[in-house]
Image: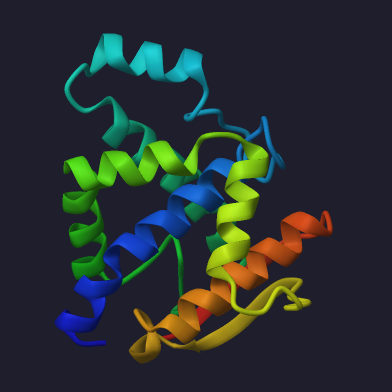
Length: 170
């Protein structure tokens, strides 16, 4: 994964994280028992951390999703919610920008809108992924093929009431 490739795909990766993070929350598909993207949560966070509430939402849902994925995926593998440290830092920085806020706002407009956006990111809607499934190596991360495979795996899982944990070999 080159810096040029990962930087070009950072908005796509952030969008995937936010869409899946939102869809995995209690009010949508309940893969994790959080509601960081609910109205009440945002108002509470704005009271506590007014300047960084969206960043707090992001990190809260990422941590919830990371824990579930870590339980399912082999140690030493990467997944959408556990990436190399430099990518994690770049995503944190992007989330702190106006572009990151726009990506977040478009990702959390509602369950049907989020599913439609995830479907558009998936080239193939026929990815019958269930449980842990390799979508390539970490050196392929940041490519359209891998992000599309990740989107397709999650889309299939949400659409069919199953669970998928796409991962990348380290």
